[in-house]
Structures are given as C-alpha cells and as structure tokens.
Length: 326
Image (tube, rainbow, N blue to C red):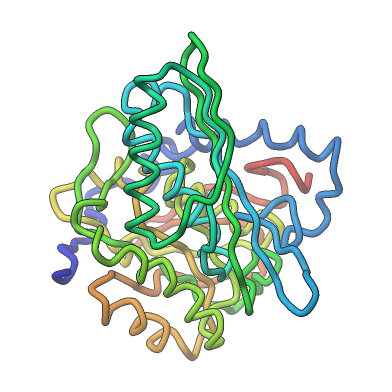
C-alpha cells in the first residue's frame, strides 16, 4: 500500500462550526440510549464490561475479548453486501481497540433469501480480508426486512481500556487515509485500497499495547472521530486538548464530513508522552497516518482548537455520551 494522501483540517474552518456539527450528529446524540443498559447490569468496570469497545473475560491463564454489533437496518436494506462487510469490520475493530487479536466471528441473520445471500457473501469476503474465521451463528428465512448482527471473540495479552486514561498521556490519531467517502452513508471506505493489509493493520494495536506504547484506545465508529474521542474519555471524566490542525485528514474530503464519518480504519490512542514517536512509527512504516494531536488533561473539558481559535466540545463533568456512568 502506498503512503497516505494527507492534508490537515482547513484553517478557515471555524471550531464553533465543528462543535455544532458534531453535537447534532445522530451518531453522537443517539448514543444516549445506551444509558438504559445501566439499569440491568453493573456498569462500574468498563474493562470487563459493559462500556468499552468490548469486554475482557478472564479465563484460566488467558484473556478473551468479546463484543458484538448490530448493523443499521437502512444500511442492510440498501447494501446487504456492504452491511455484511461492515458487520465483520466493526467487530474486528472493536477487538483491536481492546488490544486484542480477532479469533472468531459468529452471526445472526434474519430476512429474505436474496438479502441473506448478499449479507453472507459480504461477511465471507471480509473474513478473508481480516483473516478471521466465521465459526457459526444463526440464520432464519423470513418475509421481512433483513436484520444482521455479528459477534466476535478475540485474544488479548495487554488490554487497552478507557479505564486506563490519565492526565499527561498523549492523544494519538491513527487512520488509513487512502479511500473515499460513500455518498449514501457517512462511511469513509478504504476496503479496496487496504484489502491486502487489513489483517495486518488491525493487529498493530495489539503490538503497541504489548510494547507499552498505548494505554487506551477507541475505534472511530458511528459517533465520528470527535464523538468517539469523547466516549474514550467518558469513564474517567478527564478532558483533552485537541489541535484539529494536526489531525490526519484525507485529501479532497470535506473536513466536516471526515470528522463525523465512520472510517474503515481509524483509532484514537492514549500513549506515554515520551514514546509518541515510537508509537507512530509502528503504523507509519505500514503506510498508515499516525500523529500526536493533543494531550489528556486533568480538566474535564474536551477542548478542540485550530490556531488561536478554540471551543469546548463537551464538559464531561456535566455532560455524557452514553450515560453509563452518570
């Protein structure tokens, strides 16, 4: 894979405009529904779940990561093949964000034959790209809109978790910038450009975790880049200062769309402040963009800035994304 085509957030972009766009983004505002989970399960430990990208399950002498994803019904209806790919992608990214290596996928699919075939074809193709087997699941034929959920099992030695976020850690952003924005959904896809390297690339997070180059991670998903960062900070209620001018951004891409997009490959990391270059090198040697874009602060505010222009995106002392730890 060639090096990333990279630009930075345009200096003419108002940070107040960024705040407004991110806060009204459905992928951010819709996360509040997760708060309902707290009424039924203990949400005091995000490492062991619920609350992080996945949950670590302690086994006899080993650790597993388990997670699951339901794909938006509108996506399944409009692009069942792409939805099949996305179901594997989202799960593998969740395992990676916990510092794990994906080992197996299972699925649950209900719907019409034609859609089922395309969903399963997408999952099979994605499983090959990510080098993770589909080991089972559940399939039901039904004369109704097709629904799709998938679940993953991973193995982890050194877990990454939002519980490990501390003031003074560097905030890193890593992404594959070689791709394009879908016109119908807010997805930045690099599947075609990255297909030969995805299996390797998602396993790089386990490498930086095991080498002590990262403490916490969050994959960028439906909440977009800044919404996902707020989720990473939410449990500890630490804030961060982020320089938008340092964020890797694909060329010829609307920066506002990029900030609320779900990319094929994009993650936040918190890293030892004196090892950011070592962390970045792990990704950059494989043609991925990785940059230090800010720091975790003892303040509870997530502050975004560009030059002298800055604004508070969210104050985690008084606001929440998921509501799990209100």
